Image 1 (cartoon, rainbow, N blue to C red):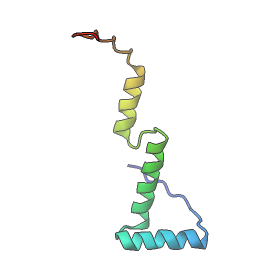
Image 2 (image 1 turned 60 degrees about the horizontal axis):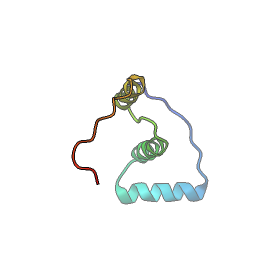
Image 3 (image 1 turned 135 degrees about the vertical axis):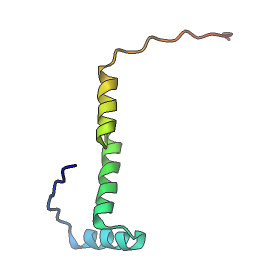
Image 4 (image 1 turned 180 degrees about the vertical axis):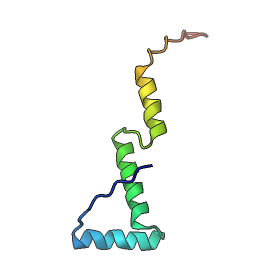
Length: 75
């Protein structure tokens, strides 16, 4: 897996809050960032890994499934 690095700047107040969260939850900054970006992608309906991206691509390329007939009593 390729690793990309980006420089991220925080104002002092935000950094203190993130740093405290990391200490309280015993997580590294990288773990917090990974969780935050996974949540952001999920919020916007984007795949978070290759397997999910392939699944979504296959679903989009597949023809729609035929509607199933309902059986049973109608009210």
